[in-house]
Structures are given as C-alpha cells and as structure tokens.
Length: 116
Image (cartoon, rainbow, N blue to C red; front, side, top):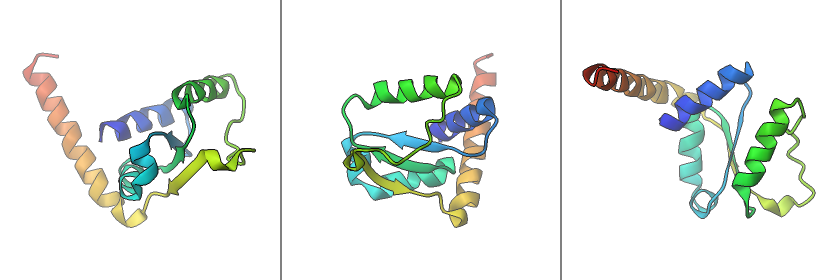
C-alpha cells in the first residue's frame, strides 16, 4: 500500500491520471498473482521489464519524461525484454481503496503519537 501512495504522489506531480508501472525482477516476472495485486492496489497497469540494469533504464526514462520526451511507446525493438502485464481490475478498487485509507489513518496516528 505504500507503493500505491508513492504512485499517487507521482501522478499528482505529473498532473496525469495515466500511469504505467514498469517493474523488474524474477518474482514479478514469474508470479502473475503478485503483478495483479500490485496493479489492483495501485490502480495502474503493471508491466515487467526483463532486462539487466532495469533501474538505470527506469531512471533514464523518468528523467527523459521530466525533460518532455515521450517515453510511453511500448513497442520495443526487442520484444522479448517485456514480460507479463496486468491491468487493474475495477471490481477490486473499493477493497484496495478501503485498505489504503486504513493504512493512511494508522500512519497518521503513529506520526501523532511520535510527535511528528
């Protein structure tokens, strides 16, 4: 749920409702259930990138986007670098939204208790 809060923050900064979460790693590549859970929780499409140095590529795409480049083309010349993809399921939205709200309240309560 913390990832969902970060995705929301990035969406707000970019002033867009459209978002693609590019993830990497063997667990996400092999486990569609985990990808689907992240897509549902964050409310965004999740796509696996099967490539070494995925973090470096992600930072480059982020910086290019900030500089105004359009990096949304998914038609990579090397199609095998892309793994599975999951779309958020609308019928799961209410359950995840409720969980995220509970998490937000717990986090705020802990911050108040610590005097933050």
